[in-house]
Image (cartoon, rainbow, N blue to C red):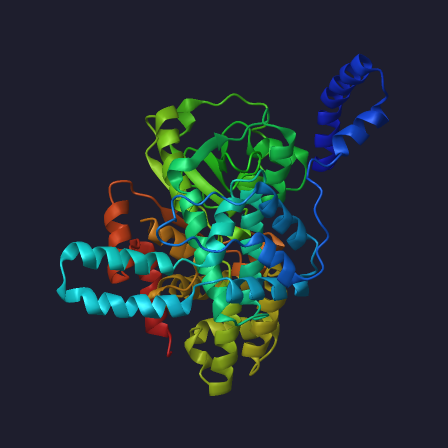
Length: 505
């Protein structure tokens, strides 16, 4: 079968060669000349730069005075282009050094801030107009000098994409602890604030992806798919075909670049198995029967730009897609995710290790369940170690007897992991936290819902439906964010209760 990238290249080639032939014949030169003309850079000649200090002094303009803040002319576009060109030429460790210098030496003028802060205190007894003006001066003085540079870069062609990628580098530097500079963390916060403004929901375009979409876009959708990898061109054709919908947010400043992608399956009931969705061959060339569409299943949502971490896009995308589907199918009444549970197996392995050291393993499984594990594995007295190895390798799914024996235990452990394990009072699992923040209900755990190696390795094959009851999402969201209360179904609460009765944690 033809790989997707080759299929896309073939689909593009007919159009591009036809266009190139017309162009070349009109100007009487050959296709090689066309390549040479197209590849010529439009970037202006840049003066050679020897040091990082020099490039920063040349490209980071001084912050205008408070009085001239609205009258100062912007720096030339070439300064932004020069900065971008220089940064891209650096190696990874050089980029870290460069951003450290930028964030530390071209940030806030702390001396000026201190002086103005003192004036704010001194003027508190004066008239309100004076107080507000001094406070406004203080607010302006808190503007980092590099913020102007970032704003000017955003106006250059390709500048917004450059800044998104730049922030991805910063996030990686901070998360890997390559740098613990407070200045770099502040720089990251400034970038996040700017990107949140530039990528506000009102500036985003909802685009439905179909088989007729540009091949480059289809290829990016395939490459960015983080939940259920796309295998080939037939696979992506299925995911944008009948009984399927694929939507993406795009931005005018990043044409052809999806920001966040949502895949939806249209079905009669709420799905409990991902293989039936991503590997269903019967839907490629069929006509949709509207009477068979009662539920919309969000089975994959992927953020494609690491630099937009923390900028809320996914929750807005789901809301927009719900409205889009309601418009297309007014009778549709059920909206739900079919979500993976990343981290469950890692959490379970850690729990079993700690229980083994403390000699409390009996609390994880009932006595009858441990006896069944011992009987299947032939490991009397060492069932904990055997079970840990089986879960780690995924070999346990080869034994139907072991699958049946472990189902009740793993289901209640998974329910507790999703419902009871917290970070700062909110759900520890990131997928759960995302949907709960959107106002969804933790509705149903599904046994053997993802039997792929990845599904078995991440969550013992269990998946979860987060149900969107549209009349309750606002109140659920408020309860979760304000009171850290999780809306859950009777099935989930029953499994949690069983865990609490059996566990000795």
